[in-house]
Image (cartoon, rainbow, N blue to C red):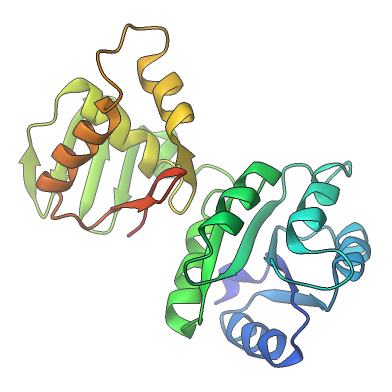
Length: 229
């Protein structure tokens, strides 16, 4: 619990019950929380406290979450703050609009405490490289990715993973919880190479899922893919 006490999280929602619920569960984990009921309050609280992570409800009076996110991204010192949206299930438009505005992730309502805390931990892992990442080795549960040797071990078994699949897996796993857009993946993995067909990424994702029990790589409809464990 003590390792979490350095992280500050700003919660923004116009429903006091939700704010209380989210704050309670994060404080139990040792995080410092701040709350705001409107977009404008959120901007003031963010400029005052400079949180590591901001959880924003999409549907709010005053400034909605999308507008608030854009405003936050224009403020010096908050351009790189992690921002995740709270959205109702099935609001694909809100999710896509949120990513366009600069959000890092979204969390779907209704919220289950354990899932919520897990998502927060995944988001906060992006802040700073771990010692494993610096050494070129990532250990994510029972998955181990050795980026120096191009080796993948899953459940103590070494997997045969071609170079492009390895690079794709390594990219997604480097920031658990982050949604990588299809364009971002294409530019990072394939660069200026000539690609035959528009389904190249999908084929590589499918092959990785077959090797990893379809556990880790999640599809974000209309946006891209992310890694969770």
